[in-house]
Every structure is written in C-alpha cells, then in structure tokens.
Amino acid sequence: MGGLHCPSGPLFFYFMKTSTLRRLHRWLGLLFSLSILMSTVSGVLHTVMTRTQPPPPPARPSGGTLEPAAITCSVAEALAKLPPETGAVRAVNVRGISGEPWYQIYSQKGGAPRYLSGKDGHEDSSQDERYAAEIASAFLGGVVVEKTDYLTSFNREYINIFRILPVYRFDSADGQGTRVYVSTTTGSVTRHTDDRRQFEANVFSNFHKLAFIPDKAVRDWVLVALTSATALVALLGVGLFFVTRPRSKQI
Image (cartoon, rainbow, N blue to C red):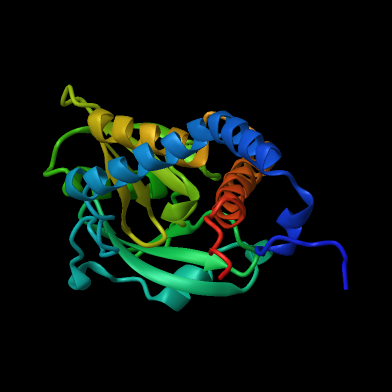
C-alpha cells in the first residue's frame, strides 16, 4: 500500500531537508566555534597549570610558638571578664601570638573572634590581625609582609574554590607580587600566589568560566547558552551523518 516514505534515521530529521541541516550545521558551527576554541585552550592551560601552580597550602597551624608555662589565667577566669552581651561561647582556641598565649574566643552570635590574654585575661582586638601577619610571615620564610586587604566575600582572585572566609591578604615586597591569604580561624594560609601564577589563573578563568563577565547570573546564562548551542551543533552533525549516509542497494 502506498504512503509517505520516510528515510531511515532519527524521526526529528525526517522533516528537515538535507540542505537545511547542512546550512544550520555550517553557520551555527561557525558562530559557536569561538566557545569551542576557548574551551580547548583553557583545557590545555589547565594541564599546564597542574605543573606550574602549587597545590593549596596544607591546613596546618603556622603561626607563632606557644609556651604553655606562660599561661597563668585559666579559660574560665578569662571568660568571666567578657561582658554579658557576648553570649554563649562556641569555641576556645589557644594561640601563640608574639611569644604570648592568647585565648581565641568564638561566640554563638558569630562575628569576629575575640582575644583574651592567657596571662591576665584582658581583651585585645588587635591580636587577630597580628596573629594573621605572623602566620603570613612564617609561611614566607620570615619576610616582612604588609596587610593589603581583609575579605569577607570572594572576589576575582580569591574565588569560592578556596572556601574559607574571612581571610586577610598580605603582600611581600619581593618584586614578584607574592601574596598570601590567611585565615585566623584555621590558623593557616589558605592561598599562596604571585603575579605570574595569577596571570595564568586569570587567563584560565576568562576562557573557561567567562570571568570577564562581572555579573554571575548573566555569566551563568551565557555559559548555559553557549554549551547548549555547542550541543545542538553536535546533534546536527549526528543528524547529517544519518540522513546523508549511502543507502544500501536494493537487490
């Protein structure tokens, strides 16, 4: 019985002419080839960065030393000197800062840690930055460092893969732009970079994640659009393979 004859292949392509598929594949491929090129270049750069970029610093204490015998004020005695509005204590760490013992206090209310002397219990809020500076200097081999920033949110250099906030940024005057990010909560350096390494990281971020688009929501939509369009081009190529493949001869 006669009827409409459909060529073999995916049903979607039955209703499209081969010439239409070819034009769509050609022009969409040309239009979105830039995103493919950016992805491949960033992939190559990522491999290079695994050789040139150091791994994240280990999360281990790297501040000053602590002399237990110098602690003459107990935790309970020190906490008793805090005002009532401080709230319940969530955690207490003992830190060695400038050769002296300090209690690092975190309350249930959150916020920055408070520092109470392990000798007499007096409070000194400046110890947090001093402690961070000692961590940074010790990590870099004892060089003099300068505080250049205090981050409570991620930015283009200290991105969310580093996870920990807040952090201090300290720079050294070594002519290479060496800088470290320090968390006094973990008592360690969370990121170590310099101008050359950051240049590589910036190129990768711009190519692979379109970091040059400042608005994250817009950036995410553009990435979704580009990857979806690339997938469409690939599907058109698969469709062309089926609708243009040689037909078997009828015997």
